Image (cartoon, rainbow, N blue to C red; front, side, top):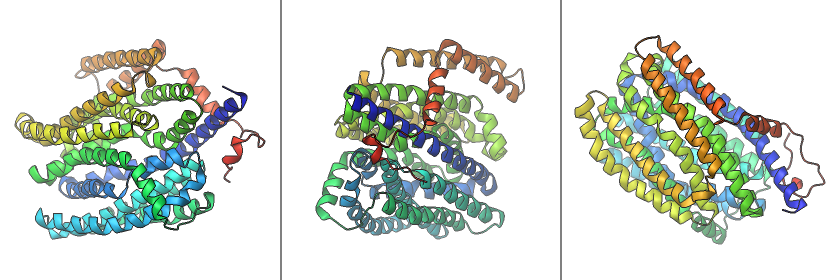
Length: 508
């Protein structure tokens, strides 16, 4: 690699590391707020009312993904290397989303009437629809800022919006306000992000909002495989809740939703992949295939270093987490949580593999794999939900849905990873994964042995100590590399004279 290329690579890595630290700090604060609210909400609402909220959220998230058009990945891929391109297509995409939203709200009301949903839930569903539409728009605005490398304002905004959402939600619960006010708090949070994000994007990208039909058409068509992939993936990930609502009732939806909320904690660093790694991958790929392959392999190791223990300890303490946080009314959710916890290591690998397929020109390939998941998921739900009810009784429908999700994720991840092949894994990363799996197996055995002998807190603490000893002692987690990453994040900005540095402005 030339000296200029090496300089560009160092600058991009430093910028990505700094943005990762800023966004991760913001993410931790927002996760703290979200954790408090989401853990209290099911307890105070109860399984029945929480089932209504969970259904409304899942249904509208599924439907309004159709307004996304897949442009977020296109933004991170294209705007990362030519910032001015945002003005060519984003105004037209925004107008197209507005027209699509009218159709989707009409379809929502038709579904509510045909499915004979109670009229008192209509406002809850429609308000969640508004929040889903704003969320889709805000994700694209955030993608523009991530691609530009300007994340300071976004980091603060994420915290402020979460505070509004948390405060509004808790007021609705504490004051026993109507259920639709819970949805209204989400709308207020997303509306704030929309207003401020529009100003940040206009400022940092000098973006105009004119509608350019030709450029919009090219962007939408260029995003089509990503759109198909995202739509299929979102639908099969949310479809289980809608199926449960129809065949098993609100209480089962409430139990399953509680398990899903807790299991989702294992995905806490997922946003970092799109926010930081995707632009870094795109720039590394533009310089050389060798550099891109190296960056992806090492990134996968770091991501899995977080994913494995998160999933493991979510599963080992499933019964305790559910009863401690939600109360005895949610005890039937524990087994669903154990099954769901095992999914998310697969999810991390699938996300990185999907990015690899997109950046190497095989976006349609990963889209067709996701379509395959959309076919497999309803079939597995049909096979397992009714049988799990007979096998497990209360909470069985959720266990069946969780098994269906696990099966779907296995199919999708194996298909994507097999296509990526050596680009994602080398002998070193496979060795790290093997050693981590051995550590997980050993800790699971210890946990089973201690299950009836000691207090759960002591058992989980012993599990954690043994896990750390095993992964550090075996070299499954490379502490030196983690420390090096943090040190890179703390380095000073590259010198202003460097050519690439001038494309990444410092934000006060």
